[in-house]
Every structure is written in structure tokens, then in C-alpha cells.
Length: 80
Image 1 (cartoon, rainbow, N blue to C red):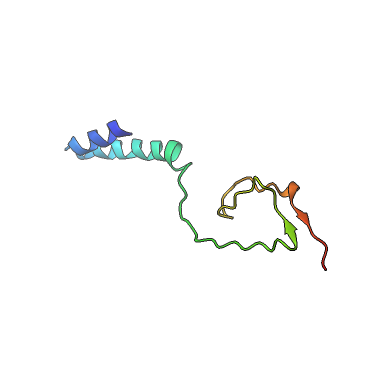
Image 2: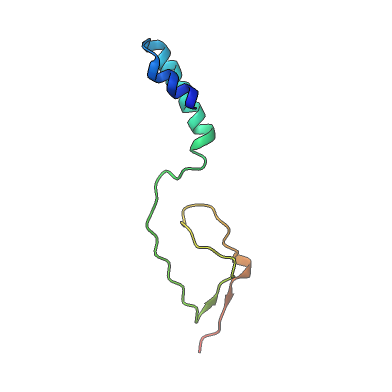
């Protein structure tokens, strides 16, 4: 990607610039965007520990992303 950026900075031929930008889009979609969230939400997650026990390994994250929730290790406490 760095080589493409430097080439884009120095290139003056418009058709070559278009080709470089197309190559950069391919690199971005295959290597970069997979790891970058397209947007982020501010999440506030409240857990009532009197009603549910969560596993110690659980790290809460953005609910719109894919992360390990360990749902098979959650347990409910009976109501008092």
C-alpha cells in the first residue's frame, strides 16, 4: 500500500492515477477494511448480576460486531 501511495503522490498522468486508485481500493478491501469497523457506537451495557452470572472470560464489546460471548456459560439466578 505504501508503494501505491508514493506512486500516486508523484504521478501526473491522469489515467495512471486512476489505475493506482483502483489498485488501492483492492488492497483496502482485501487487507484493511476487514479489520476496521465502518462505524462505532457508544455502548453502555448494564448487567444485573443478581439475575445472571457471566463468565469471567467475557469482555463485552460492540453488539453489532462478532465477538465471543460465551453464551453457553451464562447462568440465570432464580428470582427471590
